[in-house]
Length: 286
Image (tube, rainbow, N blue to C red; front, side, top):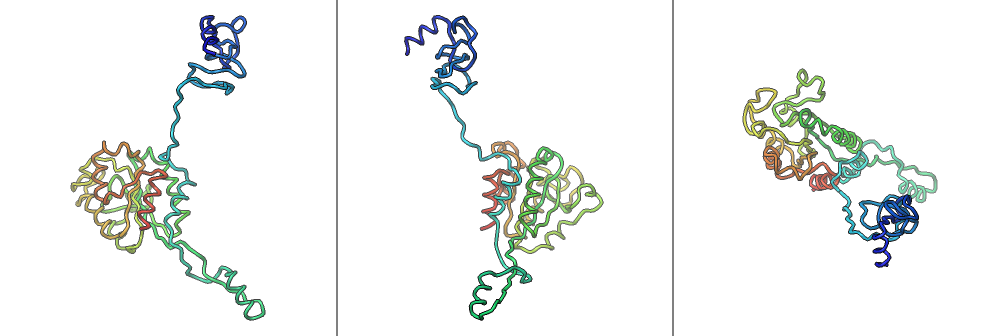
């Protein structure tokens, strides 16, 4: 085999089962010899070619590299729903409107006539409060945030959301088109919901560190108190708080403000990936 290959090379035949023969009698570039590269042969041996073209080679004498499947890809709505389902606490409450099949069978057998039993519907008791960072550097993450928002509204029947920009300050809002006219005091939000609400911040935490640590640090208005104080108030008010960051985790060390925010939420910042979202839900479910 080696001798045949050597002779083919000396004759200038580069065929291998990966192209259509062009040279006289299969000789020359793109020939029809079973050995070489960029030629054609139905059962060729591919050597020295960057990739397959026809999928016919019976052997490939090159070092081939393969990539592991990536679990850090951005999420689709369906995958997000699956990950969010880890955060569930089932309970039956409310009006008895669902047929209790086991109870109906048992009651009918005991009484000798049809005894229909009803029970409350099984519901997810978890309550969720989400704060979405919008504008600026978050514009490049709109798609994944929309997917998260859509999935969360489907999975959590008891969910509230608010918007903020860069860092949480003394006010938030529900409608970005009217954010200057219809602001909601953050104090009102902190006093409106019970401690058992699961709080999720969604943002890239990418800003000037002054926006977090100093009064007046906001780029849009004069904040009397630093954003760090408001983040601390949230973590003191609610038992379970996590931060989901759409920025790839490998870039986190290069952003000082991100590290500051990560410390403020007790190192409970997770990348907005399939793996990161699952870890965040486990943290909230503890």
